[in-house]
Image (cartoon, rainbow, N blue to C red; front, side, top):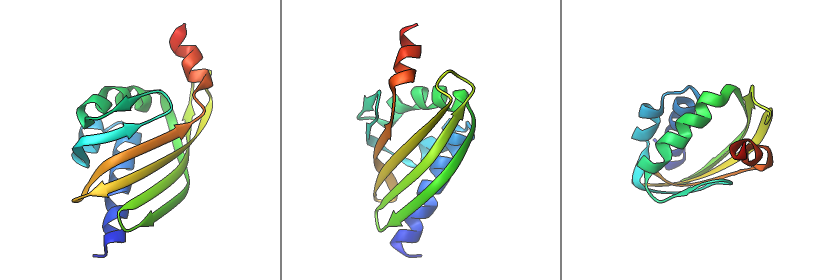
Length: 121
C-alpha cells in the first residue's frame, strides 16, 4: 500500500468514527502527543481532545464531505457540520499530518462566531 493510500485510510477511518459519534475508535488513530489547533481550542495531547470532540459529535445531525485531498503524510478535508443548534451548518476545513501511521497534527478551521456566542450563554 502506498503512503498516500495509508494516509487516506487512516484519515477516513478517524473522520468516520468521530463524525459517527464513536470517539473511542477515533482515538485509536491519534498519536498520544497529538498537536491540535482549532478555531476554539488547542491541545497537545490526544486525550485532551476526546471530550470536546464528543461534544461536537453530539451536536451533529449530519456531516457532508465536500472535498478530500491526500498526499504522502498529509491530508485535507472540507466538510459541512450540520447541527440543530443556532450555528446551523458550519463549513469546516481540517488539515492533517501523519507520523508513524498515526495522526500527529490536526488544524481545524471554521467560523466560530456563533459557537462562541452559544458558549457564553
